[in-house]
Length: 179
Image (tube, rainbow, N blue to C red):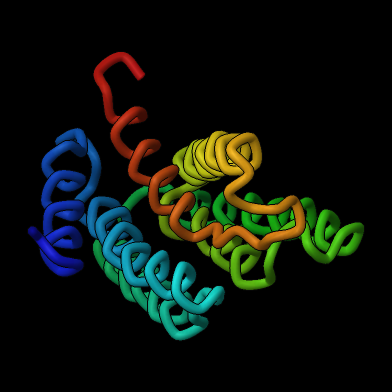
């Protein structure tokens, strides 16, 4: 059996090998770091029902370092890309924050913060695909556990594992030729 560190290494290696060669090295690092971080986040969420802020702060630190590298290397469009990433993060915060205001049990604050960080690292398009795939995976799981009566409708479902699955699926599917 691989164990958690083996799974983590396998996820990162497969994701990095799968990425198209035309992606910049710094963007590949951003994607790899999200996948690396989501493994322990998913485990903590499953065990304790929280998304650790420390991991989200570390991911923002990665983004800041990568931004500094891109600015120093004079990568074209870096500020425009950052503006788009921030705009998508704000929209995600607004939409999911409104859902939380309407129904406190709809989404956890940690999940909300995790979704807001994703566009800053994955970019707007991949983040949106990741979030949609996460919700689809969570929906399928929820239908299954409710139909088999393994959980009640009021039971909280940790969402970070679905974010990991959705992000991995988005990275793989968006990277396919012709996507």
